[in-house]
Length: 304
Image (cartoon, rainbow, N blue to C red; front, side):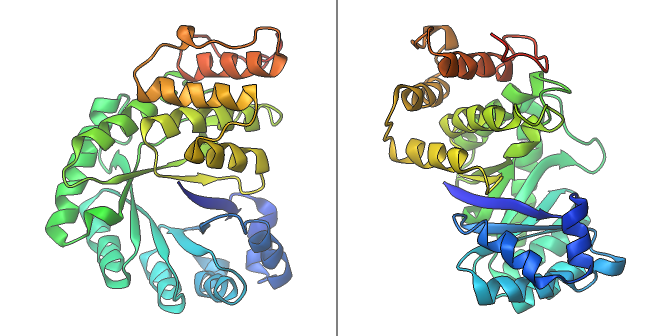
């Protein structure tokens, strides 16, 4: 699985201030903290005002100090192009949607620079569909437009768009189903990617790692190819690599594998065996029930 670090983003006030000040030492610390990633996502929003020219500045620092590729994450195509021109390594462009103008501009950059291209399953007119069928329809429309433009299907990564479970927990399973449907429906095939931390956005801070880890296991079973993740969550990284290698080292690892296999094989959560005396396994199962919309979410759901 391709791992993309999410830890340079302007949503964080501290990160935003560091980027405005062009604080290279701060940025180097964030780059080094993501050295287990394949790519580093540079989420600079619209990249206007004080953030003009920040992408080429960041690209140069990463190129000189890291083996990671870059995911250029901005709505500003002109600033994105500046970053792509500077960086000589492997790249993602994040992102397009069902928007002809953006497909034309951003898709053109993907072709010019040989970048992987993230496509969000939303439309400019109607936003994010509520169900997997609607997201798959949008994915097909984007796919056709991208192939007509000459974009390599192997470089297309569709994002089913996870919504926070504390806002609408029914959407967790819809995104999982979208991944499965995309992996089964396209010929030539495409890949999938998620912004994993979105699933736990708004949840209590102490619950977020557990929610992210369980959801990652479910998504892996659906056929997920790449994930934008918190690069500082070493246990999440370990679990994903363990799933990829199918090398469980503990009963808890085996439970994560079984959850993944359940999704792959259209199984049932109630059929998974686990140690009911083990509090950690109980928490994982309860989290899975919520993510699969089998149990109502609350901020105190791990209090067993």
